[in-house]
Image (cartoon, rainbow over all chains, first blue to last red):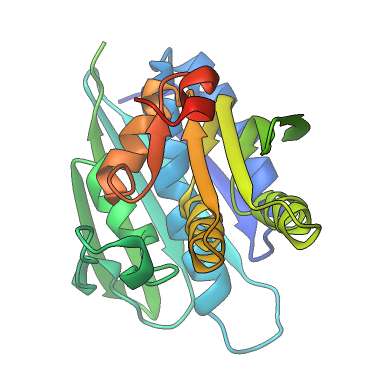
Amino acid sequence: MNTHDRKQLILGNRVEELTKMETFLEELGTDWNLPMPLVLNLNLALEEAITNIMFYGYDDEESHTILIEFSRTDNQLTIHIIDDGHEYDPTARPDPDITLAAEDRPIGGLGIFLIKKVMDQVDYERKENKNYLKLNKRIEK
Amino acid sequence: MKLEITTSGQFKIVKVDGRIDTTRAVEFESSVVNLIDQGCNNLIINCLGLNYISSSGLRVFLVLQKRLAGQQGVFRLCCLKPEIQEIFDISGFSTIFQIFPTEEAALAGEK
């Protein structure tokens, strides 16, 4: 793997930073020649993961950085999201009941479920007081 | 995100262009809730120009559905692109909402 197949993005824990991510992903899609539906799914998975960290990851008012690393092979895209927020394993969260009627559906709780659905594989690890979330997705041309 | 609001018979039609994500969901919600507050009870969201939605956006659709259902109103969606339809399918939202292929069908209430 050469450096051309790796990219990284650093975000502050502010919602406005999502716009930066949106632009970054558009450029990544062009640079890596990724199909548009994949870029949209990637954006969705990342937005859900990152907003979760921003909204629930921190108690203090300090600024924190979230590191997102992208790497690819011919047919595989891997993303690592690393944050120094509370220990939180999104893969352990139970899936929502998507068969409930509108009046019974809770508002919210879909984000993590969407990540699992649009990605092929989601893995979590806690080490050195940081959360490591790894997302994998096959690149279909 | 751009919103265009028109009236057709007893329906207000909100045509949404662009993205409904975390940074834009609040604006989308307040604009549409404002319409309901002003007395709109029959609402169609035309999603032809909607090219991205996250859980923040889905949340607003659910809020609108609950609000209008609570006051015996009508809430319909139309013209979802395949990639948006997919997100609705995954979330189980396709069965919660009345979704129509065209605006005409949504107005008539006939699939």
